Image: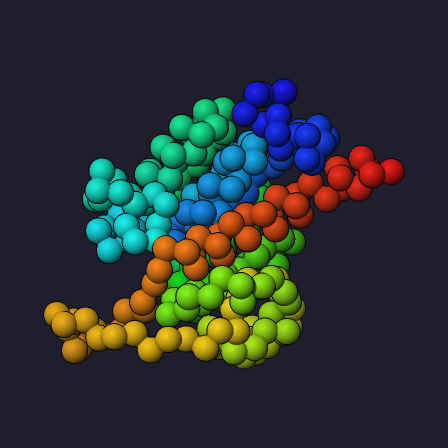
Length: 243
């Protein structure tokens, strides 16, 4: 057993660690939430990751994204994340796709088998397609709902989409997925009433308003999602150990 994973093995058991080392997880969206999901997966010993995001790191990401520093500004998010993963877990196989997930890239993004998908995409149309595709292909998926304009991590929870409340994005997703015949999927959400952000002095009036954000809320959301996925991946192994 690798020394880096000894403390985790003490908690979860050797069978669980071996299962994680043979698992492949895809993270769609390497931002404030997705970066921390990736961090948990790497530090937990997941053996293979596919990281999907078309964006580059910019200075406005530094307040909340674990991959964002003044040294990584300008780099693709997937490359910055892959470098961080390899600094933590050199043996982890990392595939990077610097593309936007949409109709035209669907087959590219699903060209490999995944044991789990972390959906940290912002755009509704893309989230809908990703959830529908994952469910059609029987790939477990956990989707992040809105974390912008919120500050209370104690209200974050993981549940079925049908049980969400007080989240605008979750409400839209419920309606749109119902139209597509989907009633149930796992999501992380917060019922916290969003704070109305102060307008930026130099904000272009013609642009859609930018959600406000903080360091702790997206990170807590990502850590929760990562932990949930790890426990879902090892469930058969931990059940076996318990018996």
